[in-house]
Image (tube, rainbow, N blue to C red):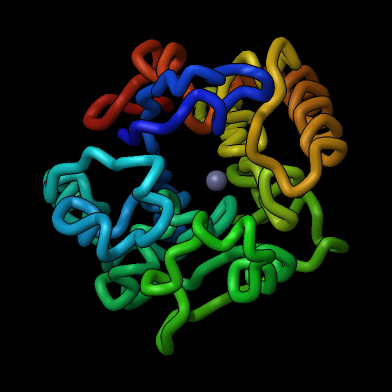
Length: 254
Ligand SMILES: [Zn+2]
């Protein structure tokens, strides 16, 4: 979870300093050819001295995290082996999504999929966007990056439709959302921060943090088309109202 100013969530709201508490989810997918971590939450350091680890962002937003919520202990508690993770898929590289990269040595058989655009921006963001990135987590040797080009939009990771990557810029320039096809045939569309909330998805509210409002609006419209096409349930990135209605580990979708 993270406490954030409402004015940083919804455009035109929160002028009196109201705060909201948002979930900071991550996702795990099992597949016969190797498992997938999507994002990976916060780095384990965030359960301790988060000000030191996250820096200036914590002057306005404060995380709430226990050590057990970090990606490796959470996987082990669920009976899952980090060595069986084949891919770490990054919707983007904001600091509440890079928890698996922070402990990349725990995933000896994983490669890290992210767009080349996001990789470049995260390493050299504009000054207004810099507090959203924690370079301790991902600016280091030993991360086996695989960089997706825009020409690969819709990339099908396993080639069987299980996991497809859709470019949804606006929140960040290289953001992508992930469409997951379940064994039952049902689909989930993990919007991540292309739609922080269902209100954003449906344009009842506009997100307050964007690198491009125009791109953000086009991306939520794209998400709605994708969800219509596959009749997917859209999972918003940080929605305190939707979150309790979803299944959480050890429950799962199949
Ligand atoms: Zn973000």
